[in-house]
Image (cartoon, rainbow, N blue to C red; front, top):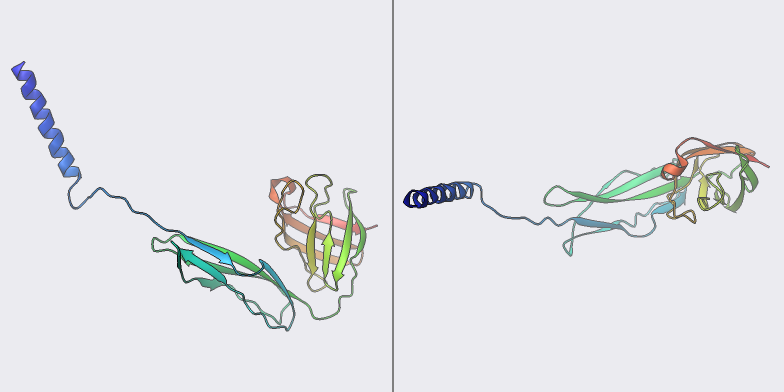
Length: 213
């Protein structure tokens, strides 16, 4: 019994020494909290202007742990060149973690469009669609993916320069909740146009071709 007690004492001493060695000042036990930035756009996610107009950036807000924080803006807008431009507002916290928000600026050609895309259309698979003209270069499309039913996409799109078509990011564009943005789109003539979509795995990214009925 005495030998057993001595062994227990030895093991206890060794364990204590190991514990102290693992918790020295060079390797303290502790915990740290990192506060992530929350970056939010001021104004709309998509802003459309006409070529040559002034773009006044509404900016964003950035907050870390309840306090305002600085952000940087990545990207530029060429107001004299029709196209689609992205501005990203980013804040990096003290631990190197980034948070951001992105705005899309659409610059529309100032020239009157030679096309009127309003009317009835059909996708190459036979699915019908209706396009309504809001203004010279802005339209709505009630079946942008060419698939009817709960996943049917209802969007607004822009004819930027009689070549490039663009569907801005639209959250919950379908009854099933699918969000969509076009990756690429082109108008061939007054009776044919197409685009590729970023709209969940259901749609994929292959071209969706529309022909006037």
